[in-house]
Length: 122
Image (cartoon, rainbow, N blue to C red; front, top):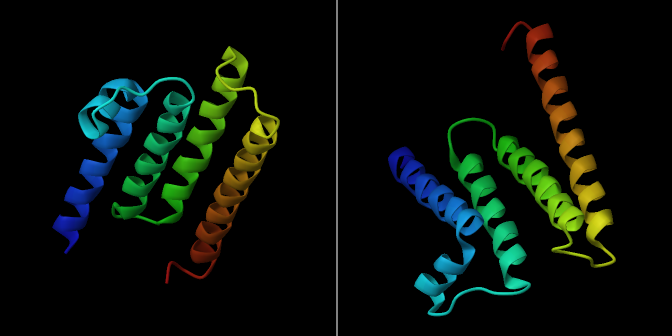
C-alpha cells in the first residue's frame, strides 16, 4: 500500500508542478484548450493543492501537507496581488488567513514535538 501511495504522491506532485510552471500547456493536454485569463491563477492554486496533497500522502505527519499548501498558497496569492494578476476584494484576507493558519499549524507541530520530547520520546 505504501508504494502505491508514494507513486500517487509523486504523480500528483508532478501534475501540481506542471500546473504551476506551464498551466496553459496542462490545460491544452488535459482539457483540449489552453488556460487563459483567470484560469491561470486558479490553475496555480490547484497545482499548489496537489503539492500539499502529495506531501500529506508521503511518509511523515499529514500536517506537513497543510503547512506546504497554506504557505505556498499565501505566497502565490500575495504574488498575484502584487503583480496585478489578482485584485478581488477577498484576495488579501485570503492571504492573511492562509498565513495565520500556516503559522498556527507550525506552532502546533513544534508544541507536539516538545510534548513528545518531555515525555521521553514515547
